[in-house]
Image 1 (cartoon, rainbow, N blue to C red):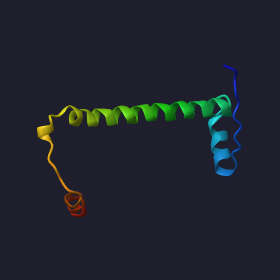
Image 2 (tube, helix red, strand yellow; image 1 turned 60 degrees about the horizontal axis):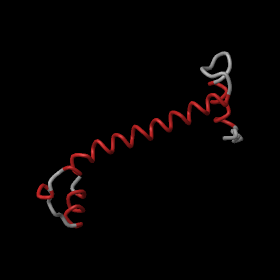
Image 3 (cartoon, helix red, strand yellow; image 1 turned 90 degrees about the vertical axis):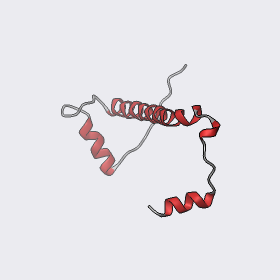
Image 4 (cartoon, rainbow, N blue to C red; image 1 turned 180 degrees about the horizontal axis):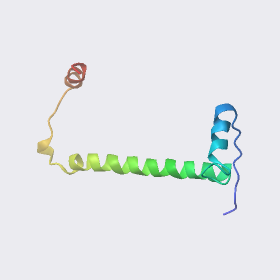
Length: 83
């Protein structure tokens, strides 16, 4: 696969923040390295969020149909209005 480039222009506060992250005082050698780290972190966060959601939903997906209770939209609205 050929290497592709994406060019992004940042100004103002965003540019100042990137500058703080790179160079002698920063954690990254250059802006590209910092941006790649941000993208990796974003992808990791999405994976963790998806894994969390699957863990939360798994018990309901495995539950027997008899364990479910039918509720109307009005029941849900009434329950949530009381919060």
